[in-house]
Length: 452
Ligand SMILES: Nc1nc2c(ncn2[C@@H]2O[C@H](COP(=O)(O)OP(=O)(O)OP(=O)(O)O)[C@@H](O)[C@H]2O)c(=O)[nH]1
Ligand SMILES: [Mg+2]
Image 1 (cartoon, rainbow, N blue to C red):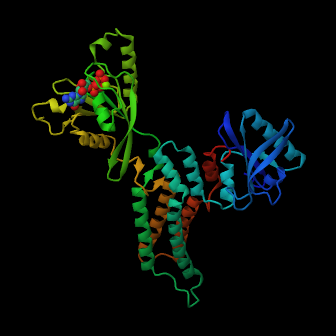
Image 2 (image 1 turned 90 degrees about the horizontal axis):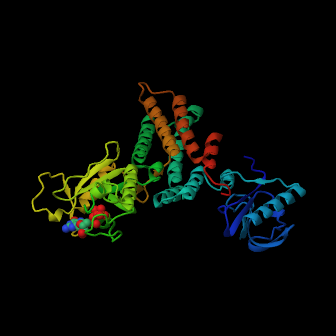
Image 3 (image 1 turned 180 degrees about the horizontal axis):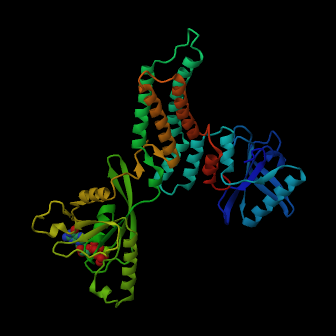
């Protein structure tokens, strides 16, 4: 990535829109647009296109206090694809005429420049990518935590302490002849490292994997027509979302609604789906076109489910489900208020939609059937990507190696202790992007879109 060129990209989404945003960053961003040193902030600017003059709004920021750390100009233009093409072509032609090195930005290059210019660390850059790609509240909040430096400050504290310990160990190697330099005692080193190791172990155990925030488990309420599925659906989501009636076949389309299940350590968000009843004689006979379509849609929803909640009222046989399904099945007795006798099976979950009994048990049973792990972490809970997790684990391993050396009979040579401490520090450095191989940088910035 050549950071000495000036780069240009459309930062708004493709297609027609009210306004489009064209971004330029680099040493010649201002001179290409004939902006003087005094031209800063938001100002009217006229582009002298071959097709005619085009007035635009320009937001001019000067290095180093910009997003990229270089001069940055953002042009707000009418969102016409053809007009944007004309402006880009004009600016490229002008750059060529004036021997200015202007080129189209690659994905994430504006943020990569911010990283290379020390405007943000690698974790903050990854946080920005997560915010851009977020599709759920959980992903958005994880991205925000990352870009606001939640993991960065933990890594910095860890790195500072490892640096202090490594410096003390190395001081013992390099300056033993100087009286005022005291090498750290093995016991003091062990205590400090144990504190770091315990903190890391705890953090890694408590952290939530960012991948787990990507999609919600799908929970489908299944049963025969009139089994009380829609009534249970409404009771769980807490409003009259779907029609309930005595008539068999009331629900036709599959209805979806997010449902939040509270867990001791966070929240499990699921997509609850209500479908048409299955197993009715009429649909089996394939008489009615609408009913066939209803059954097809319900079957599709069942195939995609992570959990099937089978609803069976008292004195009815449970709906038989196809053998090939891999989703777990949770059996619920609906309309439990109609049941005169107490159930023999204490594990049987009975629920009554009109008076709300059993709903909490249904929620608990659903979350435990789905593994019981939160997919929306509690506020402040650490969210780690696979890269963060593996770097922290390698750092923990290196700390473990130093501790093993300290436990050796007769103690270990200070050089070896220093080497393992350095490895832990290198891992922390690679987390923040201070010591980062090019392939990791490429991987991180490739996940951005062009123009960011
Ligand atoms: N007493 C009692 N009646 C219920 C309960 N749940 C549902 N019902 C009644 O049972 C009938 C059918 O309820 P629905 O929720 O529409 O049943 P469904 O399984 O969605 O039916 P389809 O959409 O036709 O497959 C309605 O008259 C409801 O009022 C319950 O817990 N107790
Ligand atoms: Mg229904």
